[in-house]
Figure 1 (cartoon, helix red, strand yellow):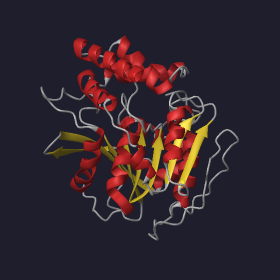
Figure 2: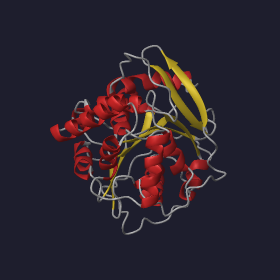
Figure 3: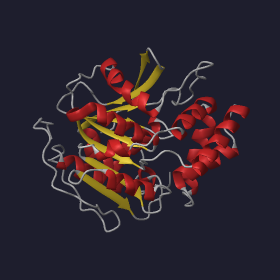
Figure 4: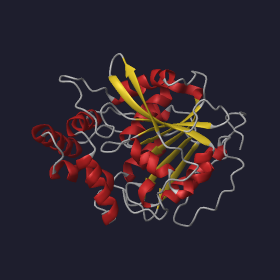
Length: 333
């Protein structure tokens, strides 16, 4: 999270999110937020998953940026929150076993079905951090149903010892104090920014979100399962879904993100490594992410009628193949 050069205010093309609570047999409630008419098959359907310390509001804010007007008017969105990660959530039940990254991915088809999305409906999956690893696992299950995948700050390996130790200390403090605290906040700031400091405004907003809206107990459970994630390199090597991999030049995860890109099969993959960006391109330069997403989705058969500006020198795309059109659906663009 850092300052945005585009105004993040509500625009007519970004409908207000509507909350839908999906009750699952294994993992309880998933609080989902819908933007746009998901029953309209003439619009691209995008599903999103968030990172630790964030929730659907990060995606809603990005869609409200002016640079996303054209895209937001031509798509509908389902933002899926991991259990208990939505704003002002109550504590998850005592003894609740938080689902793993794999188990959340396996639950997504049922969540979509509960929201009225047909099994045959084609999708674009977008995930950040922990949400990106979930989306990779979902892609392995979804097959050709998934037209494209957009992965922000995705890592392929399990947590290293230092990351694991820092995460364990953060979750211990969250559980012990049962509230957000400076130690846990520092861990999350390092996770999102690394050594790069975000703007004062962005850090203040992130601080307010952690202390005022996130449930500390539930967050500790989510961090724990993220720290216990397993390696997904074998999934990446066999992933044939067109994929846009996104990171910032100064991101704390840039090396891991490049590994993700290299694991993907040659052909249908694109890397955006944006200069002047740390670990949250949505906040720091939303216009760079918006342009890259629109070029990518245009390449797989959507958004063909949107006039797209040229990418600036500091937002260049790596391997950008001619991706074959994956669907002939008329998106009404």
